[in-house]
Structure formats: structure tokens, C-alpha cells
Length: 96
Image 1 (cartoon, rainbow, N blue to C red):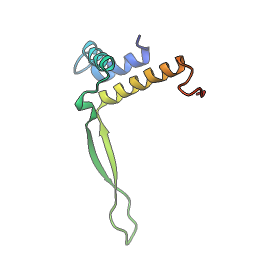
Image 2: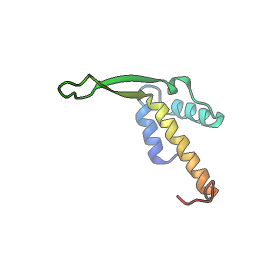
Image 3: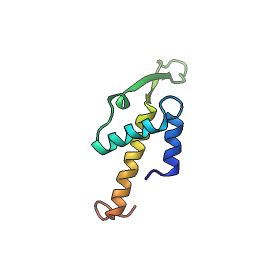
Image 4: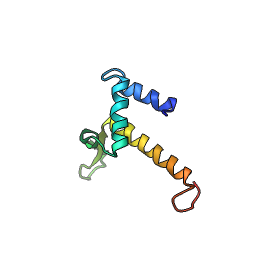
């Protein structure tokens, strides 16, 4: 079952452009099949120029912009794995 926080996150990400039900269906299908949509794996590279001191060469800091739905899916998958781990009392007997 979805927690209220997750439902609100989906509503914020999907509500305006696709509808909550469609987003939930896509995410559930991916979670159940263990697959990730190709678009969710794509990133846009943005180079931000670092502040330079006199006599130094220009350097850039790479920032990768990821798909919002992919990040939401990743968070849900992480939550599922944490729940499984806690139900099994840790994969290696450790405590978290």
C-alpha cells in the first residue's frame, strides 16, 4: 500500500501532465516486472563553470539532471528493499 507521502509525491510529479492513476500504473508495472523505462535512465549533462583564481585554467563542475519519475521510482524501489531487509532482520545479520 502507498504511504501518504509517496502518493503526494506522485501527485505532484504526475498530476498535471498524465494523471495520478496512469503514473501509479506505470510505476507499479515497472516495480512488479523489475524493469526501468529507458527514459528514466537518461540524464542531461550541464557544465557549471567553477570560480577561477588568477592564473588558473577554466574548470567545470558536471551536474547531471535526472528524470523526476525515474528518481521517484528509484526512491520507491529503495523503500521496498529496505522493508524486505528489515523483515528479514538484515541481509547479513547487521542492524540498521
